[in-house]
Length: 481
Image (tube, rainbow, N blue to C red):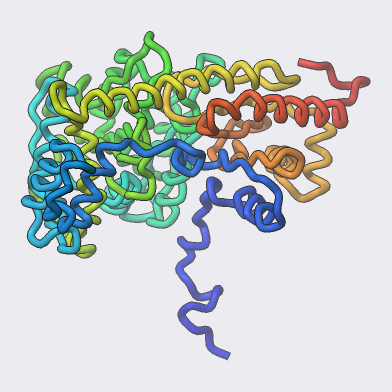
């Protein structure tokens, strides 16, 4: 009997190769348990509002008015919505060609791209060209579009930090390329040693792989580190010397929980270096409304900015963007509001500032609670979350636990995370879903559960972990760490 096009054995092999651990086995099991009535704490994905973070008031007011412009015809609208929200809604509606229900330019609304360019110039101190900024349905769509443009065949490699966010491994598999890992140094707070980059690229070339681009995630996901200015400069020099495109995933730039290493964009460091460096490197930078203190994951608003990309290539990227006709317009407006928030003197400024500051200060406290909690546990070590939304503790599994996992047909950290889920309802992601060194095991959890719930969550984790270690440690041949 002949196979049909969507029979499993005849579909695209690249689709089968895709793995996405954040919504993988653990998430599916957690969903099953939830249906059975068990309380589940979904810490597997950076989804702030799903874990109780309240939306910021001002952007929701503006978007409500944009979605229902007839509200502005009501003489009492000023009693419900502040004047600056009404004015901003009128501004965004004036940029569209028929409101939120109409397609925009495939690159996004020109007026909002100009707002993004102004934001970038204010952040970095160097002008930005709105024509080289594309608005996208979240940063992920932009990342996938650029990888699809760069990858030509299975001999094209992309340098990706390990541990990495599974978007990269999944998209590289989908587009038929090769992931070339470079390992971050856990013992040095997940810093990047430039020697590892040279080792990775040399090994890839030995295998016949042409490395064409490098990914950085700053602040890191899942590792939470912030790259220093000197480290960024080394990376930029490496990419220039090796003729690589740098893909700078900077979606967590607002999520910083210490003062020693503030966020610095790759673009700023590049332009600070000056010519000829600043004219050489091909750089694509990504940002989103899904993270930071906004957490508007469901709105799907993001952008990418291209630096030193030839005009003919930009035209090709525009052509591919045009296939989707338009990024979603409400997401574009959220992005405009994120890069151009209320200013001092505006009616909504104080409330916006209070809400934003409260979210970030709470996240900073939660980062400390979680790190301290993990480090109080038997056979668990965890670097402090400097930025982003995650904690990535190393779980030092006893040999007997590794043997038990093998007997159960599970990867050891999957085995541990499943046991944790069953015992506590805490849904995490095994470190193997992000990549890790051989024989080393981790899990990733967000720092997003409500601050008042965090101490009890860590108590619950500690109780499970210590009982797990008690069960599987062999005191005759294994010493506590």
